Length: 158
Image (cartoon, rainbow, N blue to C red; front, side, top):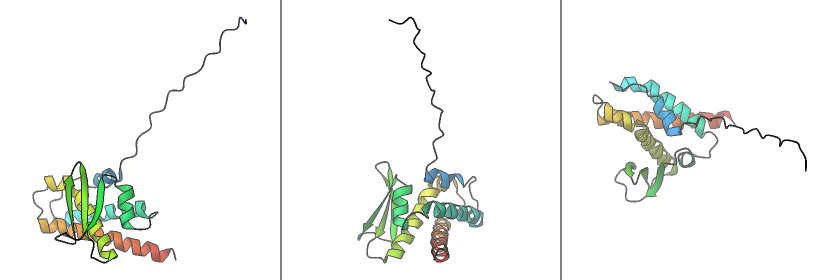
């Protein structure tokens, strides 16, 4: 038997790692003030589109991007949607329903449009000066910015 004292083991204290904010939280964080007019929203909407486009560039399409980047959002293609697309909150998750009879590029536009409504939901609860048409125009602008950014990216990498 040895008289040596046992070596002490140094316990490593785990360094607290800062958890990366979800994509939805990152997009919502870009909207720091409640908009009073549609014009107030343009810069934020475009910044959100750029961020989403940057996060989406590794995916093959927008449907895959939403599935990967937004685990709390389900996308379903359905024949019974009254519009090109609609969103709902059910069972603790957001749902985007898109008309399955639409061409794929229109389906993707509808998904991105619906996603903007989800991003803006907390703001929409606070902003009383914007009309429904304003929110729709903002969602269209966001979807167009995402799609046009996607087209520019694809054409510049060929």
